[in-house]
Image (tube, rainbow, N blue to C red; front, side):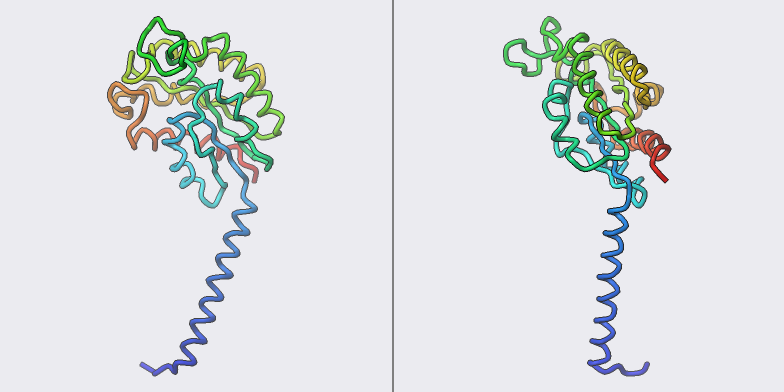
Length: 227
């Protein structure tokens, strides 16, 4: 092998470094040109968002708030903060699982008592969700609403009846239909394999469940991304 002088070696290394910096700059510029996607939702979306980011790498920049978006009560308080000032090509959003849980009527803390009220009853959920939808429509972004995922009757944690998610999803469906907003029916998608994909007696999902949901979310987002 031919010997290489130290000077020549340093020159080669410097050239390589220059290429690396150029490549890094190019990647940053490319990322800035990609469509921006915002995911809003509770801990179910917290579970699938990292996988969606991986699946859409190179196609879109995917973000979500650095917090659990919880229910519509928090949503109407934080929606402007979550949206920010930069434009979004697509906003994929969901609210419901926190609204339908039961809470202490005085403290608002999660309750396992069936006689305690929902965080937001159906009427309040509808009113809150309408406010959120109007704010999201004002962004001009492509909007996609995800139905709340199913769970076994009376899972661990705050009191939740399995039938309630159907009622809340139906209210949401009517709002989305009226506003011509696309629906990503995660409820129906995951229901057939719920026992396999979801943690036992829980609203949350196993890693394979989050990946399954991420595939469904990625598919609907990919279909509407600007070319």
